[in-house]
Length: 479
Image (cartoon, rainbow, N blue to C red; front, side):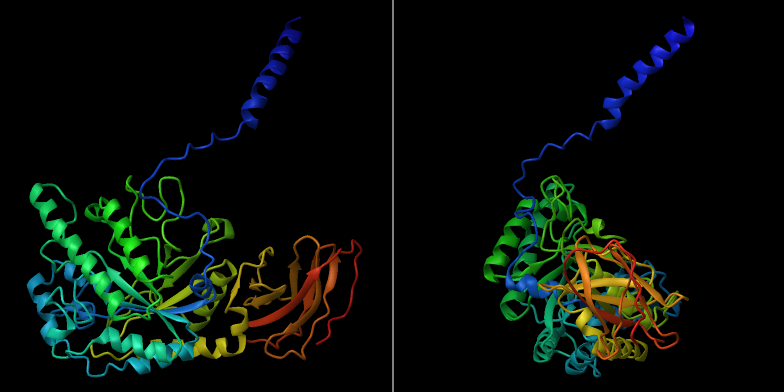
């Protein structure tokens, strides 16, 4: 009897536990928002479709911080060079007076643009004003501009014109945080702070409208310095300003950093919906899997050293190689994003030789394999250890971007359901073809000739809908 009671209790416990185990997490109730995201899903207009297909971009961090180059009075600043004004090792007034020394005689916007073109970049993001507040255009709303430097000329215009001429789209970087402006506040804790910040908001709005008016060909704005409490509290103002900018420039592309919702949520609003046109959260990091991007557009901005954006005379830590950067480009595109490589020109306006060399290495690879990068995205294939898949938008064409050839020389492919491989060939030489060895209904091997591919390469798969055979079929590779 005792055993029966125990057994019955155990059975009852299992019955009671089953509904709990099967129970799903409660659905979060949607929050009513005035200043959250105003759109769900991706933009489908021509401007955004073009941005989405760029694949590879360039970032340029340049300003007064390039003059000290990460050091002051012989002491190295242990941080990103463009943040050196925030360091106690340099007096703020001393840094602010660097505008009287800004005379980049080696600056050549056309040369910069040609370097970007050679690399294969389809767009550039350029710093019009970083956190130090120094403006590389002659803004009417502050004296702290290039117009009051020895150089005097409008650098933003020179950059926009040069990149436009090369057919490269321009995105303007703009820091809301402004260390030089007397009305900037990290937080608003008093009536005086509130009054000052109202003036700062007007100043910010004026500068942004000025940029969009002065440079009508720019395609978007890339915002920074928007994380401090003072700006996070400005949900209504920032939302209204965003609406005004979009009305002034239809098709304008704005990332997820610009504003918060009324609950202080940034990038994603209180309902988890992306604010802005693409996610800017992938700074110096790349998603691991497609689920990480939640169906949103995104780009990754990457430095060559681990964390140096503006020019630093001493590159510290790991310096990425050309092959690493090419692989990062492929990885980003395979997950539906763009890869944006940063350059930090010197105080005289020249780009360091190491960066020029990297640009050339990337460009050499892109000349041969660009079809697998431009207007490509997530392919829906299971990732394999040899590299990445990308898919040409609007087609059934699949690219295999191979970076790690197995010792066996056999590249495994697992196709989505009801997808068959019609043809496989080398992108660099279409006469080099491969006959897939089918090892199961949806798995194949492509066999490579050993030692023939010292550099990363691309194989093009022509696919089509169809029924896959369950039988194992072997055919010798045609090489």
